[in-house]
Amino acid sequence: MKECSTKVQPIPEPVWLGLKLGLIPHFIITPKHGKETSHLPHFIQKMKAENMNPAVIKTFQHYYANVCNGADGMIGDNEITRINPVDLVQANQLAEFSKRGKKALNKAVMIVLNGGLGTSMGLDNAKSLIPVKSSRSFMEITINQASQQGVRLCFMNSFTTHRATLNFIAARNFSHPVMHFMQNKFPKILRDTLAPANWRQNPSLEWNPPGHGDIYTAMYASGTLGRLLDAGIKYAFISNADNLSGTLDESLLGYFVESKLPFMMEVSKRNPSDIKGGHIARRKDGRLVLREISQCPQNDLMNFQDILHHCFFNTNNIWIDLEELNKRIKNDGLIRLPMILNPKSLDPRKETSPPVYQIETAMGSAISLFEGARAVAVERDRFSPVKTCNDLLVLRSDRILLTHDSKLIPNPENKDETIHVQLDPKFYGKIDGFQKRFPFGTPSLTRCNSLTVEGDVRFERNVVLKGRVVICNKRKNQEIIKAGSIITGDLQFEPVPGHVLRGSKNRSINHKM
View 1 (spheres, rainbow, N blue to C red):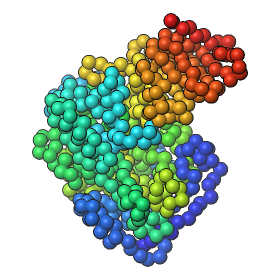
View 2 (cartoon, helix red, strand yellow; view 1 turned 180 degrees about the vertical axis):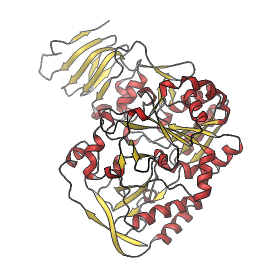
View 3 (cartoon, rainbow, N blue to C red; view 1 turned 60 degrees about the vertical axis):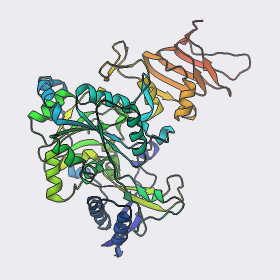
View 4 (cartoon, rainbow, N blue to C red; view 1 turned 45 degrees about the vertical axis):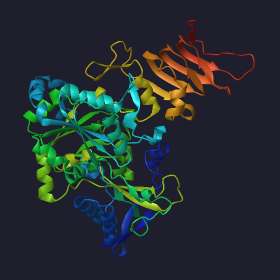
Protein backbone atom coordinates (compact mmCIF):
# COMPACT_ATOMS: atom_id res chain seq x y z
CA MET A 1 0.00 0.00 0.00
CA LYS A 2 1.35 3.44 -0.86
CA GLU A 3 0.97 6.61 1.11
CA CYS A 4 0.04 9.76 -0.76
CA SER A 5 1.47 13.15 -0.14
CA THR A 6 -0.48 16.18 -1.38
CA LYS A 7 0.22 18.87 -3.90
CA VAL A 8 -1.54 22.21 -4.20
CA GLN A 9 -2.01 22.97 -7.87
CA PRO A 10 -2.20 26.44 -9.40
CA ILE A 11 -5.74 27.31 -10.45
CA PRO A 12 -6.18 28.11 -14.17
CA GLU A 13 -7.95 31.29 -15.14
CA PRO A 14 -11.26 29.66 -16.23
CA VAL A 15 -11.68 28.12 -12.80
CA TRP A 16 -11.98 31.50 -11.06
CA LEU A 17 -15.58 31.69 -12.28
CA GLY A 18 -16.31 28.49 -10.41
CA LEU A 19 -14.62 29.84 -7.29
CA LYS A 20 -16.68 33.01 -7.34
CA LEU A 21 -19.89 31.03 -7.72
CA GLY A 22 -18.91 28.66 -4.92
CA LEU A 23 -18.89 25.66 -7.25
CA ILE A 24 -15.52 24.25 -6.23
CA PRO A 25 -13.26 24.37 -3.17
CA HIS A 26 -10.91 27.31 -2.71
CA PHE A 27 -7.98 24.93 -2.96
CA ILE A 28 -7.58 22.08 -5.40
CA ILE A 29 -5.80 19.06 -3.96
CA THR A 30 -4.96 15.83 -5.72
CA PRO A 31 -3.10 12.82 -4.35
CA LYS A 32 0.27 11.68 -5.62
CA HIS A 33 2.47 8.70 -4.84
CA GLY A 34 4.53 8.79 -1.66
CA LYS A 35 6.62 6.48 0.48
CA GLU A 36 5.63 2.89 1.15
CA THR A 37 3.38 2.45 4.18
CA SER A 38 -0.02 1.08 5.13
CA HIS A 39 -2.54 2.36 7.60
CA LEU A 40 -5.21 -0.05 6.40
CA PRO A 41 -5.06 -2.31 9.53
CA HIS A 42 -5.80 0.75 11.69
CA PHE A 43 -8.83 1.61 9.57
CA ILE A 44 -10.11 -1.97 9.74
CA GLN A 45 -9.63 -2.07 13.51
CA LYS A 46 -11.46 1.25 13.87
CA MET A 47 -14.41 0.09 11.76
CA LYS A 48 -14.64 -3.26 13.56
CA ALA A 49 -14.75 -1.39 16.88
CA GLU A 50 -17.93 0.26 15.56
CA ASN A 51 -19.39 -3.19 14.72
CA MET A 52 -19.51 -2.36 11.04
CA ASN A 53 -20.56 -5.04 8.58
CA PRO A 54 -17.71 -6.82 6.71
CA ALA A 55 -19.24 -5.71 3.39
CA VAL A 56 -18.89 -2.07 4.46
CA ILE A 57 -15.29 -2.58 5.56
CA LYS A 58 -14.49 -4.32 2.27
CA THR A 59 -16.04 -1.44 0.34
CA PHE A 60 -13.99 1.16 2.22
CA GLN A 61 -10.86 -0.95 1.70
CA HIS A 62 -11.47 -0.87 -2.06
CA TYR A 63 -11.70 2.93 -2.17
CA TYR A 64 -8.80 3.43 0.25
CA ALA A 65 -6.56 1.36 -2.02
CA ASN A 66 -7.58 3.60 -4.93
CA VAL A 67 -6.64 6.72 -2.95
CA CYS A 68 -3.25 5.30 -2.06
CA ASN A 69 -2.63 4.39 -5.67
CA GLY A 70 -3.16 7.99 -6.73
CA ALA A 71 -6.80 7.88 -7.85
CA ASP A 72 -8.67 11.17 -7.56
CA GLY A 73 -12.06 10.12 -8.96
CA MET A 74 -11.93 12.63 -11.83
CA ILE A 75 -13.79 12.08 -15.11
CA GLY A 76 -12.31 14.18 -17.90
CA ASP A 77 -13.95 15.45 -21.09
CA ASN A 78 -11.65 13.15 -23.03
CA GLU A 79 -13.39 10.14 -21.44
CA ILE A 80 -16.99 11.07 -22.27
CA THR A 81 -19.23 12.40 -25.01
CA ARG A 82 -22.32 14.57 -24.64
CA ILE A 83 -25.83 13.10 -24.72
CA ASN A 84 -27.91 13.78 -27.81
CA PRO A 85 -31.46 14.65 -26.66
CA VAL A 86 -32.99 12.50 -29.42
CA ASP A 87 -31.34 9.43 -27.86
CA LEU A 88 -33.40 9.72 -24.66
CA VAL A 89 -36.80 8.21 -23.99
CA GLN A 90 -39.35 10.94 -23.22
CA ALA A 91 -41.46 10.27 -20.11
CA ASN A 92 -44.44 12.19 -21.51
CA GLN A 93 -44.70 9.55 -24.26
CA LEU A 94 -45.01 6.57 -21.90
CA ALA A 95 -48.67 6.85 -20.83
CA GLU A 96 -49.43 3.53 -22.55
CA PHE A 97 -47.34 1.73 -19.91
CA SER A 98 -49.42 2.99 -16.96
CA LYS A 99 -51.67 -0.10 -16.91
CA ARG A 100 -48.64 -2.39 -16.79
CA GLY A 101 -47.20 -0.29 -13.98
CA LYS A 102 -50.35 -0.62 -11.87
CA LYS A 103 -50.13 -4.42 -12.15
CA ALA A 104 -46.52 -4.28 -10.90
CA LEU A 105 -47.20 -2.15 -7.80
CA ASN A 106 -47.33 -5.25 -5.60
CA LYS A 107 -43.75 -5.99 -6.63
CA ALA A 108 -42.48 -2.45 -6.11
CA VAL A 109 -41.02 -0.49 -3.20
CA MET A 110 -40.43 3.22 -2.65
CA ILE A 111 -37.04 3.79 -1.01
CA VAL A 112 -36.59 7.31 0.36
CA LEU A 113 -33.23 8.84 1.24
CA ASN A 114 -33.83 10.30 4.68
CA GLY A 115 -30.38 11.10 6.01
CA GLY A 116 -30.39 14.90 5.82
CA LEU A 117 -30.51 17.21 8.85
CA GLY A 118 -31.00 20.41 6.89
CA THR A 119 -28.20 22.12 8.82
CA SER A 120 -27.88 24.78 6.10
CA MET A 121 -31.46 25.81 7.00
CA GLY A 122 -30.66 25.88 10.71
CA LEU A 123 -32.29 22.54 11.50
CA ASP A 124 -30.88 20.10 14.06
CA ASN A 125 -33.24 17.21 13.38
CA ALA A 126 -34.37 15.26 10.35
CA LYS A 127 -35.39 17.74 7.65
CA SER A 128 -38.17 15.40 6.58
CA LEU A 129 -40.04 16.12 9.84
CA ILE A 130 -40.68 19.84 9.31
CA PRO A 131 -44.22 20.85 8.21
CA VAL A 132 -44.31 21.77 4.53
CA LYS A 133 -47.90 21.56 3.30
CA SER A 134 -51.22 21.73 5.15
CA SER A 135 -49.28 21.23 8.40
CA ARG A 136 -47.98 17.91 7.09
CA SER A 137 -44.28 17.07 7.01
CA PHE A 138 -42.27 15.62 4.13
CA MET A 139 -42.40 12.26 5.87
CA GLU A 140 -46.13 12.24 6.50
CA ILE A 141 -46.88 13.16 2.89
CA THR A 142 -44.49 10.48 1.63
CA ILE A 143 -46.10 7.82 3.81
CA ASN A 144 -49.53 8.84 2.56
CA GLN A 145 -48.31 8.67 -1.05
CA ALA A 146 -47.15 5.08 -0.59
CA SER A 147 -50.35 4.15 1.24
CA GLN A 148 -52.54 5.59 -1.53
CA GLN A 149 -50.74 3.49 -4.14
CA GLY A 150 -50.52 0.39 -1.98
CA VAL A 151 -46.75 0.03 -2.35
CA ARG A 152 -44.17 -0.78 0.29
CA LEU A 153 -42.17 2.09 1.75
CA CYS A 154 -38.64 2.02 3.09
CA PHE A 155 -36.48 4.82 4.52
CA MET A 156 -32.68 4.93 4.45
CA ASN A 157 -31.87 6.95 7.57
CA SER A 158 -28.51 8.23 8.78
CA PHE A 159 -27.23 7.74 12.30
CA THR A 160 -28.40 11.33 12.98
CA THR A 161 -31.99 10.86 11.71
CA HIS A 162 -32.74 7.22 12.55
CA ARG A 163 -34.10 7.56 16.10
CA ALA A 164 -36.25 10.63 15.37
CA THR A 165 -37.72 8.90 12.31
CA LEU A 166 -38.61 5.75 14.24
CA ASN A 167 -40.21 7.81 17.02
CA PHE A 168 -42.28 9.87 14.57
CA ILE A 169 -43.71 6.82 12.81
CA ALA A 170 -44.33 4.89 16.04
CA ALA A 171 -46.27 7.81 17.50
CA ARG A 172 -48.66 8.01 14.54
CA ASN A 173 -49.56 4.35 14.06
CA PHE A 174 -49.77 4.46 10.27
CA SER A 175 -51.93 1.78 8.68
CA HIS A 176 -49.11 0.42 6.52
CA PRO A 177 -45.82 -0.78 8.03
CA VAL A 178 -42.67 1.14 7.08
CA MET A 179 -39.25 -0.44 6.67
CA HIS A 180 -35.97 1.21 7.70
CA PHE A 181 -32.25 0.69 7.32
CA MET A 182 -29.30 2.88 8.18
CA GLN A 183 -26.73 4.53 5.99
CA ASN A 184 -23.17 3.53 6.83
CA LYS A 185 -20.26 5.79 7.70
CA PHE A 186 -16.64 5.92 6.57
CA PRO A 187 -13.63 7.02 8.60
CA LYS A 188 -12.05 10.29 7.51
CA ILE A 189 -8.52 10.10 6.12
CA LEU A 190 -5.75 12.53 7.07
CA ARG A 191 -4.43 14.02 3.85
CA ASP A 192 -0.77 14.26 4.84
CA THR A 193 -0.30 10.68 6.10
CA LEU A 194 -3.43 8.82 4.92
CA ALA A 195 -3.87 7.62 8.50
CA PRO A 196 -7.25 7.55 10.28
CA ALA A 197 -8.33 10.96 11.56
CA ASN A 198 -8.32 11.43 15.32
CA TRP A 199 -10.31 14.24 16.98
CA ARG A 200 -10.63 13.84 20.73
CA GLN A 201 -12.71 17.02 21.09
CA ASN A 202 -15.54 15.31 19.20
CA PRO A 203 -14.87 11.71 18.06
CA SER A 204 -18.05 11.69 15.94
CA LEU A 205 -16.30 14.10 13.56
CA GLU A 206 -13.80 11.35 12.71
CA TRP A 207 -16.51 9.86 10.48
CA ASN A 208 -18.31 11.06 7.38
CA PRO A 209 -21.47 9.94 5.56
CA PRO A 210 -20.26 8.16 2.42
CA GLY A 211 -22.84 9.81 0.15
CA HIS A 212 -26.12 8.37 -1.06
CA GLY A 213 -24.19 5.90 -3.23
CA ASP A 214 -23.87 3.91 -0.01
CA ILE A 215 -27.50 2.86 -0.41
CA TYR A 216 -26.62 -0.33 -2.28
CA THR A 217 -24.11 -1.58 0.28
CA ALA A 218 -26.35 -0.48 3.16
CA MET A 219 -29.35 -2.32 1.71
CA TYR A 220 -27.31 -5.49 1.35
CA ALA A 221 -25.40 -5.31 4.64
CA SER A 222 -28.54 -4.53 6.68
CA GLY A 223 -30.42 -7.49 5.24
CA THR A 224 -33.04 -5.17 3.73
CA LEU A 225 -32.30 -6.27 0.18
CA GLY A 226 -32.77 -9.91 1.14
CA ARG A 227 -36.02 -9.23 2.98
CA LEU A 228 -37.46 -7.34 0.02
CA LEU A 229 -36.54 -10.10 -2.41
CA ASP A 230 -37.97 -12.76 -0.08
CA ALA A 231 -41.23 -10.78 -0.05
CA GLY A 232 -41.39 -10.86 -3.85
CA ILE A 233 -40.32 -7.23 -4.31
CA LYS A 234 -38.35 -6.83 -7.53
CA TYR A 235 -38.55 -3.14 -8.51
CA ALA A 236 -37.33 -0.19 -6.42
CA PHE A 237 -37.95 3.49 -6.98
CA ILE A 238 -35.48 5.64 -5.02
CA SER A 239 -35.84 9.37 -4.39
CA ASN A 240 -34.87 12.10 -1.91
CA ALA A 241 -37.05 12.83 1.13
CA ASP A 242 -37.10 16.56 0.32
CA ASN A 243 -38.33 16.02 -3.26
CA LEU A 244 -42.04 15.30 -2.81
CA SER A 245 -42.58 15.66 -6.56
CA GLY A 246 -40.50 12.53 -7.10
CA THR A 247 -43.36 10.04 -6.73
CA LEU A 248 -43.63 6.46 -7.94
CA ASP A 249 -45.04 7.11 -11.39
CA GLU A 250 -46.99 4.14 -12.75
CA SER A 251 -46.19 4.79 -16.41
CA LEU A 252 -42.48 4.92 -15.64
CA LEU A 253 -42.74 1.73 -13.59
CA GLY A 254 -44.59 0.04 -16.43
CA TYR A 255 -41.95 1.10 -18.95
CA PHE A 256 -39.18 -0.10 -16.62
CA VAL A 257 -40.86 -3.49 -16.22
CA GLU A 258 -41.76 -3.99 -19.88
CA SER A 259 -38.29 -3.01 -21.09
CA LYS A 260 -36.65 -5.36 -18.55
CA LEU A 261 -34.15 -2.69 -17.57
CA PRO A 262 -31.62 -3.26 -14.78
CA PHE A 263 -31.32 0.45 -13.98
CA MET A 264 -33.02 3.67 -15.07
CA MET A 265 -32.29 7.29 -14.18
CA GLU A 266 -34.70 10.21 -14.52
CA VAL A 267 -32.97 13.23 -16.03
CA SER A 268 -34.26 16.68 -16.90
CA LYS A 269 -33.18 19.67 -18.98
CA ARG A 270 -30.59 21.81 -17.21
CA ASN A 271 -31.12 25.52 -16.64
CA PRO A 272 -28.66 28.09 -15.23
CA SER A 273 -29.50 27.10 -11.65
CA ASP A 274 -28.31 23.54 -12.34
CA ILE A 275 -24.65 24.22 -13.11
CA LYS A 276 -23.65 22.63 -9.80
CA GLY A 277 -25.65 19.45 -10.36
CA GLY A 278 -24.25 16.26 -11.85
CA HIS A 279 -24.87 15.77 -15.56
CA ILE A 280 -25.38 12.64 -17.61
CA ALA A 281 -22.95 11.71 -20.41
CA ARG A 282 -21.79 8.67 -22.33
CA ARG A 283 -18.51 6.81 -21.94
CA LYS A 284 -16.43 5.78 -24.93
CA ASP A 285 -17.65 2.18 -24.46
CA GLY A 286 -21.24 3.39 -24.93
CA ARG A 287 -22.38 3.12 -21.33
CA LEU A 288 -24.02 6.06 -19.61
CA VAL A 289 -22.11 7.84 -16.85
CA LEU A 290 -22.94 10.43 -14.20
CA ARG A 291 -20.34 13.15 -13.57
CA GLU A 292 -20.60 15.29 -10.44
CA ILE A 293 -18.86 18.67 -10.28
CA SER A 294 -16.41 17.28 -7.71
CA GLN A 295 -15.35 14.75 -10.37
CA CYS A 296 -14.71 17.37 -13.05
CA PRO A 297 -11.06 18.31 -13.74
CA GLN A 298 -10.24 21.99 -13.45
CA ASN A 299 -9.63 22.51 -17.14
CA ASP A 300 -13.03 21.00 -18.04
CA LEU A 301 -15.06 23.09 -15.62
CA MET A 302 -16.38 25.52 -18.24
CA ASN A 303 -17.68 22.62 -20.34
CA PHE A 304 -19.30 21.17 -17.23
CA GLN A 305 -21.16 24.44 -16.65
CA ASP A 306 -22.27 24.76 -20.28
CA ILE A 307 -25.93 23.73 -20.09
CA LEU A 308 -26.20 23.66 -23.87
CA HIS A 309 -23.31 21.20 -24.15
CA HIS A 310 -24.30 18.88 -21.30
CA CYS A 311 -28.05 19.34 -21.44
CA PHE A 312 -29.37 16.93 -18.82
CA PHE A 313 -28.91 16.68 -15.07
CA ASN A 314 -29.64 13.82 -12.69
CA THR A 315 -32.85 14.35 -10.68
CA ASN A 316 -31.78 11.58 -8.28
CA ASN A 317 -35.00 9.72 -9.05
CA ILE A 318 -33.66 6.23 -9.67
CA TRP A 319 -35.23 2.90 -10.69
CA ILE A 320 -33.40 -0.37 -10.09
CA ASP A 321 -34.08 -4.08 -10.51
CA LEU A 322 -33.32 -5.52 -7.08
CA GLU A 323 -32.64 -9.00 -8.46
CA GLU A 324 -29.97 -7.58 -10.77
CA LEU A 325 -28.49 -5.56 -7.90
CA ASN A 326 -28.33 -8.64 -5.66
CA LYS A 327 -26.75 -10.68 -8.43
CA ARG A 328 -24.05 -8.05 -9.00
CA ILE A 329 -23.19 -7.77 -5.32
CA LYS A 330 -22.93 -11.55 -4.93
CA ASN A 331 -20.79 -11.91 -8.05
CA ASP A 332 -18.38 -9.05 -7.23
CA GLY A 333 -18.60 -8.97 -3.45
CA LEU A 334 -19.36 -5.24 -3.47
CA ILE A 335 -20.62 -2.37 -5.63
CA ARG A 336 -17.66 -0.49 -7.13
CA LEU A 337 -19.13 2.94 -7.81
CA PRO A 338 -16.96 5.74 -9.18
CA MET A 339 -15.26 7.42 -6.23
CA ILE A 340 -15.66 11.03 -5.15
CA LEU A 341 -12.64 12.23 -3.16
CA ASN A 342 -13.78 15.22 -1.15
CA PRO A 343 -11.13 17.42 0.55
CA LYS A 344 -12.44 18.89 3.81
CA SER A 345 -11.39 20.15 7.22
CA LEU A 346 -11.75 17.50 9.90
CA ASP A 347 -14.02 19.82 11.90
CA PRO A 348 -16.16 21.65 9.32
CA ARG A 349 -16.58 24.55 11.74
CA LYS A 350 -12.81 24.99 12.14
CA GLU A 351 -10.84 25.56 8.95
CA THR A 352 -7.64 25.26 11.01
CA SER A 353 -8.46 21.65 11.93
CA PRO A 354 -6.45 18.94 10.11
CA PRO A 355 -7.16 18.57 6.38
CA VAL A 356 -8.83 15.28 5.54
CA TYR A 357 -10.24 13.32 2.64
CA GLN A 358 -13.81 12.09 2.71
CA ILE A 359 -14.56 9.13 0.46
CA GLU A 360 -18.04 9.47 -1.01
CA THR A 361 -20.09 8.04 -3.87
CA ALA A 362 -23.24 9.10 -5.74
CA MET A 363 -26.24 6.79 -6.07
CA GLY A 364 -26.81 7.68 -9.72
CA SER A 365 -23.26 6.73 -10.71
CA ALA A 366 -24.38 3.08 -10.65
CA ILE A 367 -25.79 3.75 -14.12
CA SER A 368 -22.34 2.99 -15.58
CA LEU A 369 -22.22 -0.44 -13.89
CA PHE A 370 -25.28 -1.99 -15.53
CA GLU A 371 -25.27 -2.97 -19.17
CA GLY A 372 -28.46 -1.77 -20.81
CA ALA A 373 -29.11 0.99 -18.25
CA ARG A 374 -31.11 3.92 -19.62
CA ALA A 375 -31.93 7.53 -18.86
CA VAL A 376 -35.44 8.87 -19.35
CA ALA A 377 -36.15 12.58 -19.80
CA VAL A 378 -38.82 13.84 -17.39
CA GLU A 379 -40.49 17.21 -16.97
CA ARG A 380 -39.08 19.61 -14.45
CA ASP A 381 -42.09 19.19 -12.16
CA ARG A 382 -40.70 15.83 -10.97
CA PHE A 383 -37.78 17.69 -9.40
CA SER A 384 -38.54 20.25 -6.71
CA PRO A 385 -36.22 19.59 -3.77
CA VAL A 386 -36.22 21.90 -0.76
CA LYS A 387 -32.61 22.87 -0.05
CA THR A 388 -33.17 26.42 1.24
CA CYS A 389 -35.85 28.51 2.90
CA ASN A 390 -36.42 30.10 -0.53
CA ASP A 391 -37.55 26.68 -1.78
CA LEU A 392 -39.64 26.14 1.33
CA LEU A 393 -41.55 29.40 0.73
CA VAL A 394 -42.56 28.25 -2.76
CA LEU A 395 -43.59 24.79 -1.57
CA ARG A 396 -45.72 26.18 1.27
CA SER A 397 -47.33 28.77 -1.00
CA ASP A 398 -50.44 28.51 -3.14
CA ARG A 399 -48.28 27.87 -6.22
CA ILE A 400 -48.19 24.19 -5.21
CA LEU A 401 -51.33 22.19 -4.41
CA LEU A 402 -51.58 18.99 -2.36
CA THR A 403 -54.10 16.61 -3.94
CA HIS A 404 -56.37 14.14 -2.14
CA ASP A 405 -53.91 11.34 -2.99
CA SER A 406 -51.00 13.31 -1.47
CA LYS A 407 -49.39 14.35 -4.74
CA LEU A 408 -48.00 17.82 -5.32
CA ILE A 409 -49.12 19.57 -8.49
CA PRO A 410 -48.67 23.10 -9.87
CA ASN A 411 -51.62 25.39 -9.23
CA PRO A 412 -53.46 25.83 -12.59
CA GLU A 413 -53.93 29.49 -11.63
CA ASN A 414 -50.16 30.15 -11.77
CA LYS A 415 -49.49 32.94 -14.24
CA ASP A 416 -45.93 31.71 -14.91
CA GLU A 417 -44.48 28.20 -14.85
CA THR A 418 -41.51 29.22 -12.71
CA ILE A 419 -40.80 31.73 -9.97
CA HIS A 420 -37.50 33.11 -8.70
CA VAL A 421 -37.34 33.72 -4.94
CA GLN A 422 -34.45 35.39 -3.11
CA LEU A 423 -34.99 36.12 0.57
CA ASP A 424 -32.39 38.00 2.59
CA PRO A 425 -30.29 35.18 4.13
CA LYS A 426 -29.58 37.27 7.25
CA PHE A 427 -33.23 37.24 8.26
CA TYR A 428 -34.72 34.30 6.35
CA GLY A 429 -31.80 31.90 5.86
CA LYS A 430 -32.54 29.80 8.96
CA ILE A 431 -35.87 28.17 9.70
CA ASP A 432 -36.52 30.04 12.98
CA GLY A 433 -36.09 33.49 11.40
CA PHE A 434 -38.05 32.40 8.34
CA GLN A 435 -41.07 31.25 10.35
CA LYS A 436 -41.12 34.35 12.56
CA ARG A 437 -41.45 36.51 9.45
CA PHE A 438 -44.26 34.41 7.95
CA PRO A 439 -46.26 33.72 11.14
CA PHE A 440 -49.61 33.40 9.34
CA GLY A 441 -48.46 31.48 6.28
CA THR A 442 -46.96 32.56 3.00
CA PRO A 443 -48.15 35.32 0.65
CA SER A 444 -50.11 34.37 -2.45
CA LEU A 445 -47.60 33.76 -5.27
CA THR A 446 -49.79 32.48 -8.09
CA ARG A 447 -49.47 35.77 -9.97
CA CYS A 448 -45.86 36.44 -8.97
CA ASN A 449 -42.90 35.48 -11.14
CA SER A 450 -40.08 36.93 -9.03
CA LEU A 451 -39.74 37.88 -5.37
CA THR A 452 -36.74 39.55 -3.73
CA VAL A 453 -36.76 40.62 -0.09
CA GLU A 454 -33.89 42.65 1.35
CA GLY A 455 -33.78 43.55 5.02
CA ASP A 456 -36.07 42.60 7.90
CA VAL A 457 -39.70 42.37 6.78
CA ARG A 458 -42.59 40.49 8.40
CA PHE A 459 -45.67 39.42 6.44
CA GLU A 460 -49.14 39.36 7.97
CA ARG A 461 -51.93 37.12 6.67
CA ASN A 462 -53.53 37.21 3.18
CA VAL A 463 -50.80 39.22 1.43
CA VAL A 464 -50.87 38.99 -2.39
CA LEU A 465 -47.77 39.53 -4.55
CA LYS A 466 -48.04 40.16 -8.31
CA GLY A 467 -45.48 40.24 -11.11
CA ARG A 468 -41.89 41.10 -10.26
CA VAL A 469 -41.76 42.19 -6.62
CA VAL A 470 -38.79 43.69 -4.79
CA ILE A 471 -39.27 44.63 -1.13
CA CYS A 472 -36.36 46.48 0.45
CA ASN A 473 -36.19 47.61 4.07
CA LYS A 474 -33.20 49.88 4.65
CA ARG A 475 -34.28 50.74 8.16
CA LYS A 476 -32.82 49.28 11.34
CA ASN A 477 -36.17 48.09 12.64
CA GLN A 478 -38.40 45.39 11.22
CA GLU A 479 -41.15 46.57 8.87
CA ILE A 480 -44.53 44.89 8.44
CA ILE A 481 -46.53 44.11 5.31
CA LYS A 482 -50.06 44.54 6.64
CA ALA A 483 -52.77 41.93 6.31
CA GLY A 484 -54.60 42.00 3.00
CA SER A 485 -51.90 44.01 1.19
CA ILE A 486 -51.57 43.60 -2.58
CA ILE A 487 -48.10 44.49 -3.83
CA THR A 488 -46.96 44.94 -7.40
CA GLY A 489 -43.46 46.11 -8.34
CA ASP A 490 -40.94 47.66 -5.92
CA LEU A 491 -41.53 48.61 -2.31
CA GLN A 492 -38.85 50.41 -0.30
CA PHE A 493 -38.71 51.44 3.34
CA GLU A 494 -36.24 54.34 3.34
CA PRO A 495 -34.23 55.37 6.41
CA VAL A 496 -34.86 59.09 5.79
CA PRO A 497 -36.95 60.63 8.62
CA GLY A 498 -40.45 61.51 7.54
CA HIS A 499 -40.40 59.18 4.52
CA VAL A 500 -42.59 56.19 5.19
CA LEU A 501 -42.58 54.49 1.79
CA ARG A 502 -40.76 55.22 -1.39
CA GLY A 503 -41.03 53.03 -4.44
CA SER A 504 -40.36 52.99 -8.15
CA LYS A 505 -42.98 54.38 -10.47
CA ASN A 506 -44.31 50.90 -11.24
CA ARG A 507 -44.98 50.18 -7.57
CA SER A 508 -48.51 49.54 -6.44
CA ILE A 509 -49.59 48.68 -2.92
CA ASN A 510 -53.13 48.40 -1.65
CA HIS A 511 -54.07 47.74 1.96
CA LYS A 512 -57.33 46.00 2.65
CA MET A 513 -58.37 47.02 6.13
